[in-house]
Image (cartoon, rainbow, N blue to C red; front, side, top):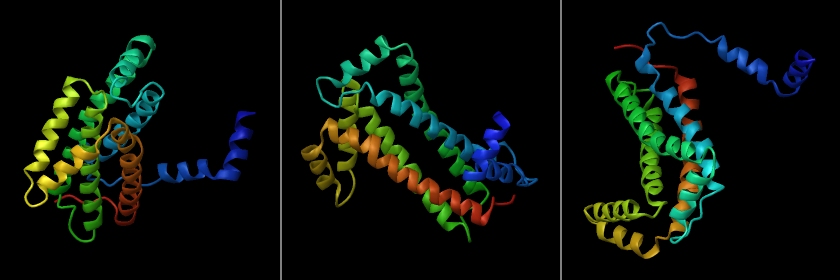
Length: 211
């Protein structure tokens, strides 16, 4: 019964055939653990997506309710505290694995022709992850979030030419609700687009060889 259903589903979607084709692809002989940081990062991103969706059912993007909603989720839900901690620590771990992945790319000189676009899309993904981390820190709107926001604002002011303008624009237009929309919609959508492009480029050019 199950086998018949799988055959029926594969005949209409091609999912099983696609999976079998991917499993049959040869792995380069020079592959090692240090080539796995990109895949580990993708796994953490998927974990962040699942835990983030879970938290949106509880979170209230308002100054007086943000922290209370997180506390209610953590204390009143069976898996609330676990999901929050997975999301919080996952963001730090994601930053570390992405940085390790970029170091590996640099050491193997995988940014050179014809992989320049792979490298550039990866750099922009790293920037988006940093922005996701920054906006996520602000969402609880407790004392730690307040001072994190102040530090980021002061950091923007240190940029030459546009620093003061960026800081004033941030202070004039920032709200918890806008930060929430940026964190859960805009930045993840941009990251998804870049991930899709990045993997297409990897498929096109393959994995860089050893030095």
